[in-house]
Length: 258
Image 1 (cartoon, rainbow, N blue to C red):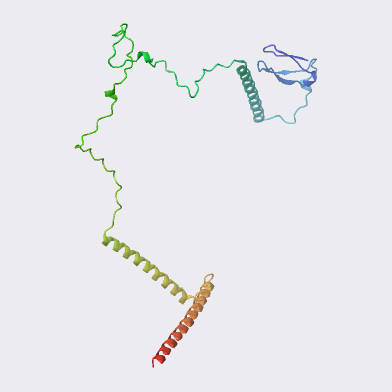
Image 2 (tube, rainbow, N blue to C red; image 1 turned 120 degrees about the vertical axis):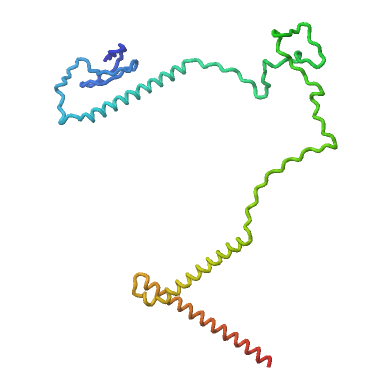
């Protein structure tokens, strides 16, 4: 089966089975034109198509159109990039200027030759031109006097002392009275906090039996009071034992002295 592009006239030979009876959208690879191709001896009747149960909404049709347009743009971009790549491969590469070797010295066309260098006291050649039409002045080698290092200063002269570097300012020191006042305030604040905590603990210890029925902190306070009483009894027992031992030692020393 032969297909002919209606725009550029390009002809394509394809298999007849590739085009169904209802036709098919084809695209010309030469001019990107799309048309509806139908099989030869088209006996397709558009009116014989089955009717849809309901027509498509305009939103669905618009979405289909946008998808088709996007697909066509993607295909056209792919063909353009392929053609550009083929054209780049067909063009011969531009010869690049040969770069000098890494160790070779760079040649400077404007550098004067050794013959153009004049030493002090040499006379110019007969053909030397002067004035506006004269060639650029040649390089003159410096004399020994001009290249000599600067003379050392006399022995009696003194060089100016270098300016001292600016040192960082020392931290500010508080006067003794202010330091004592700050330390006293910190001591008073710590003492007051300790007194407040002690009074709070003593108040909770004294009020624990009265708050035993208060939920949910009453039972916790009673348990805490019992632990405090147990600890106090243990401390009292250890204290009594230590006092008894101390008395026994004192009595033994007295008996030994008598």
